[in-house]
Each structure stands twice: as structure tokens, then as C-alpha cells.
Image (cartoon, rainbow, N blue to C red; front, side, top):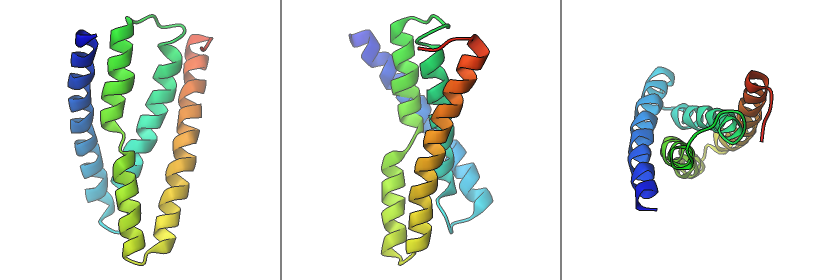
Length: 130
């Protein structure tokens, strides 16, 4: 149990660092008018979660503690739904109701679609799923 917790702790730190880097690059590219960095890491993280959760519980055998470290730690540190909530409320606070609504709809629809696409790719790649 302590070993699993240590792996999740380390993987979460790496995921947070990756989130900081990817979101920063995307936000610098897009500009400050819309939280594209957070949306990007959430959608990419959802896609990776769908792919790996399907692959690592089916055709690709991995030790349980490593699977948990990746899915809970790395991807948990990478995705940013708490930041999503804060940024959406900031848009509302600024009177940007349309942008807030677009952020909510796109983040959820694209995130769910990305989980589905990642799982479908895993099934296509490995021929089976969980």
C-alpha cells in the first residue's frame, strides 16, 4: 500500500508538470481570451485515459501498482477539472456567459468523446477491451 501511494505521488507530480507545460504552451499560442490550455489537457487526458484504461485492463498486462500510478497519479495530475471550474466561474464573473457556456459544453462533449475515441482505438489496436 505504501509503495502504491509513493508511485501515485510521484506520477501525480509528473502529471502536474506536464499539465503546466502543455497548458502554458497552448494558452500562449491562443491568447488570454479563452482557457484553451485547460481544455486541451482535459481532452488529451480523457483520450489517454480511455485508451490506457481499456488497454491496461485487457490485452496489455501491467502490474496493478503501475496501472494505478499511471491512471490515478499521472493522468490525475495531468487533467485539471478543478482549474476548469475556476476558469469557467471567472468567465461568468467577467460577464462572459457565452464563453463560459462554450467552455462547459466543449470540455464535457470533447472530453467524453475523447474517452470513447481512446477506448475505441485501444480495442482496434489490441482487438479486445475490458
